[in-house]
Image (tube, rainbow, N blue to C red; front, top):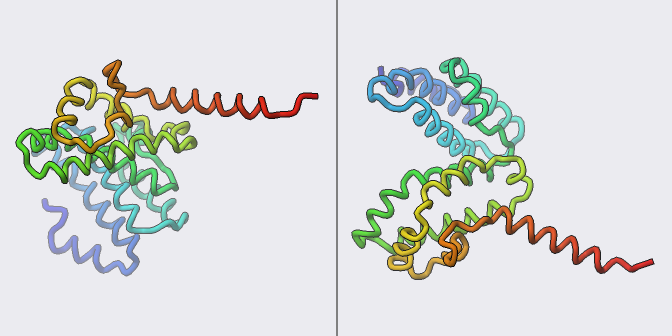
Length: 225
């Protein structure tokens, strides 16, 4: 059955409130997702991961109202747990109930990029619209570094999945550097890569070291009694 047939569209569109209209659409999406997973032989966790990041993207439509965000999170988790009770522990761990929409948007941006990166590299190798792809890569590299500046979010573990996926996608550092140096001359690769050691920068450790050094410098300025 098509979850977006005319009857379903009418049912959801009859809801006047934007949030409830969106929740209706989400409920219908989840109602038939198992059928599609079976039909197309898709990995169930991979499909649900994709949906979770799509949910994060939908939050941008409802603004920063805390009550709306709370309702959205509760409805989505209830829907998922009802439809996939055997994966309840996985889903509750995977779905981040943050009230910081920017964090959830950043997670989605990183996830989308990392899942499309293999196709982006293919386009770069073929010399197609390199400037657009290079700008996109440069933007994500800056975002990756910026999330490490968000001390509270980093400590909460909200970005753990995306950081691990990033490290996996760019594990062959030497190969990635060679491609990007050839195709994307304006990207600052030093934001992400340690060229000397041919590795991804340990930004978390660098930030911790920087914080310790600043604290030590502050202590030295305290007048001695």
